Image (cartoon, rainbow over all chains, first blue to last red; front, side, top):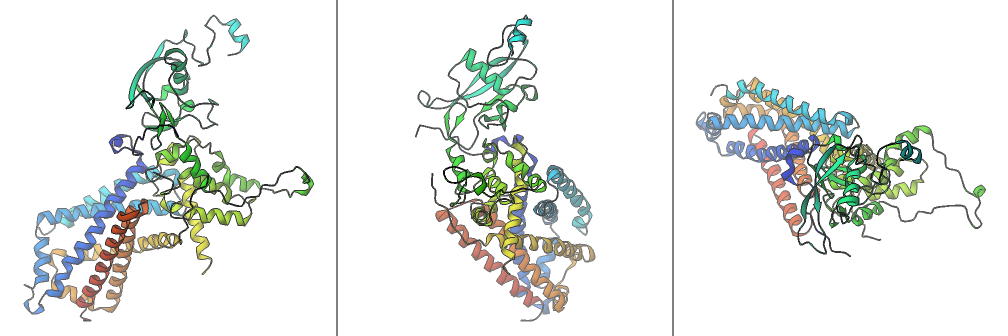
Length: 135
Length: 269
Length: 122
């Protein structure tokens, strides 16, 4: 057993400029996945105010006040746009992955990733009037 | 490089490197990872300037350095034509074969490093033992290889025929030269217990979809790649497919094995 | 050179398949959910009674329950793949396993409680 030198990590994240599209797709998929999983928790938490809301107090009950209160904040509306971006990308890249799971699209895996990005951008832009409506 | 050519030429006779140093009027700047465990505490990068001509490969430049500049430069090479798999290196940020990579395709200064992910023995030579263990890990335990000899004659052995269609199906997977580029590029394949890696799984694929292989052996191979360090670890990152010098669609093969595994499971219901 | 061959029960094929099936369902369900909550209605105008009426409809309630279960499975399994599924061992693996299990239980239980409350079933 000769002395050898451990060079460490396989893909040094410092080399990010050299990353191939497939690697970006994977990184973004993981990132958006975490965002969406986190959102699921928040969503259930927020909606849970229903359980403690007094229907007799409507429309000043805890549930209505919480939801409408949150929706009146610009930062929440912008957060919702971010959520649309995350959901759109994760869905579109997910479709790209599932097509490949059944054997379709290997020759266009890079183009598939670029398409996901473009469609995500379009989805976000299309959602702006809805997201900022009534603010 | 033939005798007839050297008689007719007025150029210098070619050295082993293949670079005709008299005719070359261009040079390329190289930055090469150096490390000698016997004399260095830390690795360092050394710069070289090497003459080039049309068709000069990275391997040519390394051979030139070794022959004319610094004979201590260590690297693996053999066939010089992309079939032995010895000279896989990390060139300008990507895993490539030295003999298959044209200098003219690279942006100078050309940065040459050993494959990431494996321990470095010296300079550009990495420890490949880990890689070979992965390749062995997909071999079924009880393979009986029948060959003529002793009492067994050719007539005793059964000829196993393969249809052209089946050959086409596995053709790409047979091209693996075990260079190690794919495993080096995969962020999941840090060690064999974690993920066997694309090369090993491709090897299993090559036999599983070969109609000549007996079912018992393929069942065992399927079991081996279905384990926790097998196909399920693939995250469809595609780095392996990007770097494979033999253009094997590795990710596709791994995905096909996932489908195959699920199909076999469902049959029991 | 011999090496240890880890023999594990292969549930991974099934979870791989379920992950894809839940994904397919979620694509449709999420799109419909967003349309309903933000295009057909306006989220900033939602009141308690609106949610209660919607959930009282048994068909819609059933859809929401399936939606909850699919999203919980897909999300948890996804996070599992992104962490333990990339190879982990020892204490770290156990901590993450238990954390995910706990969070999973909380999401499903609380989600069900919420759905039942909204529909007026409890």
